[in-house]
Length: 148
Image (cartoon, rainbow, N blue to C red):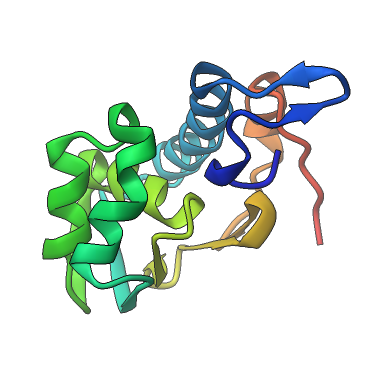
């Protein structure tokens, strides 16, 4: 699995369901929340927000996965702007849009944390201090942690 568009496809003989997709996405979101809590970061800033589609095209694209796009997520797509502070609740929604490649943006807390979410569910977290002490909790989510 590398994208929301993989729902319905088979991987190693297993069909990817909406539920399985959401579980994987939730794991990545929980990892971001763990790091934010560990660093004491109350919000993140977003900058250079780029929407992948016009709103009309976005609506067309999301119809197939309607249950994954509740109203609050749609609102974040249309109403998040550069240099905006997003609280922990909105971080969850905004990062879902990043993982789904619906939106692109810099996501950070000055001098403490930068989150990079790219193509193929690649996620990088750059922090001001080591996250070794929470590494086991992140790995329990089923994620593989590589330190650079």
